[in-house]
Image (cartoon, rainbow, N blue to C red):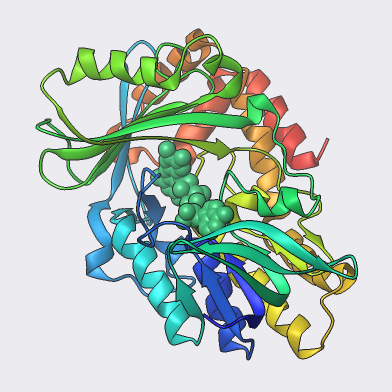
Length: 392
Ligand SMILES: Cc1cc2nc3c(=O)[nH]c(=O)nc-3n(C[C@H](O)[C@H](O)[C@H](O)COP(=O)(O)OP(=O)(O)OC[C@H]3O[C@@H](n4cnc5c(N)ncnc54)[C@H](O)[C@@H]3O)c2cc1C
């Protein structure tokens, strides 16, 4: 590890690896610091992605895929099951342990230096400007200087907070998640199942994402508003006891999803934050792998340009904010408002919608038709969604 780089990326998730790749590829001297022993582990994710999302950045590799997904089943509060085949989309349940690891190898190939067991514990300043990080690298305290720090340190991001950026999330916009990876269960292959309603996961949903024969990620996310009364774990345990009493739990994990607006100001002089740290996550689904890769790519490109032009001021780094705005902020805000509209639906509303959709023959069901039927069954949803699209 050198004592000086152009750019230090803190965090080796999808956002960090993509930022490191694009910055290094475009001429910057980059190091990526990851606090855990292994990039990609522990996995705190349901691991679901779409083919189109990932292949914007990298070609899919067979070793990343635990399961191909070509349909989903939506289960309403009264247990009505709706099978929806995918028309053009293909989904995957990833092996994120391998996927994240390989993304960091791609970053390394582009010229970035990767270090694990490198826990960043603070920022350092020179002449009132951020000039590097303090890091504990395999037990040794070090100070590493850099012109620009990229905080890719995930949902619990501290880098942004240390730099004075406003990263807090409203309680209702922070989903509390709990997931078990389980075997010895009867699971429908090539299909993802989602349960909605107060009894399963208030303000969120419960998922079953298969990962091969008789093995799956089963988890749920509930809005922070509800997790005070009853924890995500309690909801999940109740579901497991009822549906899969004989399952063996191989991995348990909990985590948070910031299903909020993207952070307004993710940059300051000498610093930018990306991925979950900047709340770049789909607020309806909680899917954050692809948005993290996108914000990593856009952040990395601007970071390299800033180094080339020797201008790492907030005003220059604002180019990253503009690129993000152009690419996905508007869509994320729309999705956020749709999330809000959905959260107003009662269990009875959802049951009614499910029954309406159930009357469409399976072979004629598309995600679009499901959406349209929801509108017909619940006209007030039409108004809410129209409002969303009209931007009011
Ligand atoms: C239960 C759950 C299920 C999910 N399911 C899905 C899903 O199915 N599909 C999907 O697309 N998204 C899902 N997500 C969201 C997805 O996991 C995240 O959006 C995505 O990982 C964000 O990538 P990132 O690179 O921004 O952050 P992360 O992947 O969280 O990476 C951040 C990295 O920074 C490291 N780090 C943190 N602090 C420091 C420090 N001080 N020094 C050095 N390193 C540090 C961490 O160890 C970590 O490796 C889920 C999230 C949860 C919690």
